[in-house]
Structures are given as structure tokens and as C-alpha cells.
Amino acid sequence: MAKFPASRAAAMPRERTEVKPKEITVERVERALAYCAYLITIYGSKVVPIFERLERELAALKQEQSTMERANKFLEAYREQRGGTIDTVSAPLLLTTRPAA
Image (tube, rainbow, N blue to C red; front, side):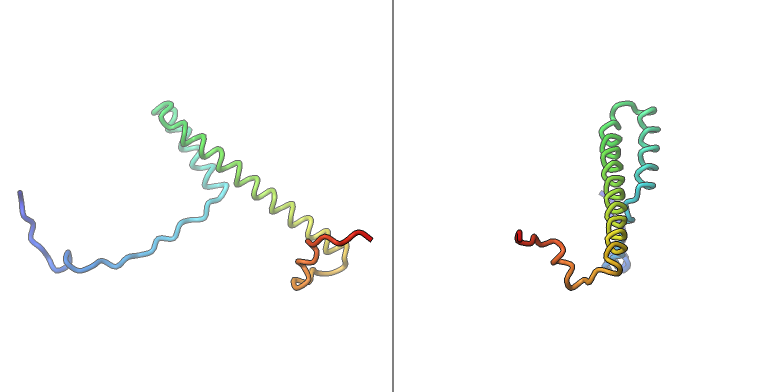
């Protein structure tokens, strides 16, 4: 077995750099889907499970965006109807049920 000379640099612990994951966006998933579709044309059905997973992820992201947009529109209409902003202290009271009169 060949021996490699040990250097001081190899013996010293390396600094760990923290890699922050990129945000998962609709655009990134669509780009991954396009690349995966290309891979399917080359490698065939081996890549299909990945393609299907990306399709599900894309649908979930779009649903989440749709929900956020609907929530923002509702909140905007609610504020306009009530003539102002929602008091964040009493906001939980909006979600409580009131006894029938």
C-alpha cells in the first residue's frame, strides 16, 4: 500500500462553511422539471419517479401561493369593510366563537 506524506494542513481540522439551502420556488421546480423531462428522453423510465415527485412539489407550491393570495385578498377586504387595520392584540378574538344570543 502506498503511503502519502502527511502534511500539517491535512492534520489540521478544516473550517466548516455553512451552506444555506436556496429557497424552493415555482421557477426552480419548473426548471428542474424541464431538466428531468430531458433526462427522461435520454434514460427512459428510470427518471420518471423523480419527474412525478417534482410535479407533486410544483402543484403543492402553486396551491400554497394561491392560498396566500386568497388570504391576503380576504384580509384586505376585511380591513376595508371594518375601516382600518386589525388590532393584533384582539386578532385571536376574531377566531373565537361567540355564544348565540
